[in-house]
Length: 202
Image 1: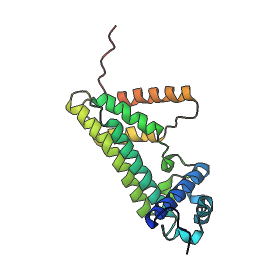
Image 2: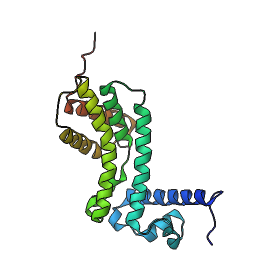
Image 3: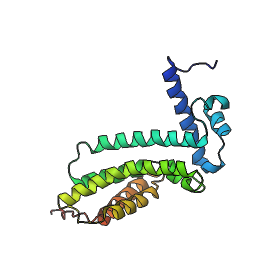
Image 4: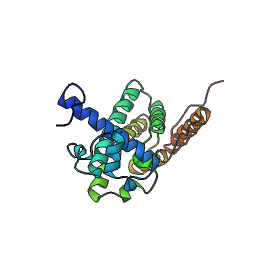
């Protein structure tokens, strides 16, 4: 029987999944998901290959579990940041900054785009996670329209364009460059949604 990590079976399961997710993320930093094997993920996680099957039946199930975890963590963090922000323009800035900080491996991993190398079922699940994040953006835009801060617009088109823009952006490692990239992206997105920002008073 394999050694139990942590104080209980539930804790062991949670820690093992975390190790697998960390290993998958690290490998996807280096190369595309299609070129990574389950054996490599298990080895990087320090877990026996056969033990992986106690948690995930295959590599794509592991990917979905990982993105489930990442999306839940991201959405919870973003909602906490938005909790005390009432103004839709400020909410949009918060949303953009959060998206810029987030390294979504399923968008930024090297190699072919994920949806082109996974099964149709998995691709649908990946799209479902994007929908969860888009719901927050849609809510901000609707609130901005209702308050007269954003003009009436096609929500589906705007949400798709804004998220496409943010998904393709990377902040880089230089602190000054990161700040400049974030400011420029905020300004671009606010223009894209037609935000009415009062001119600064002198």
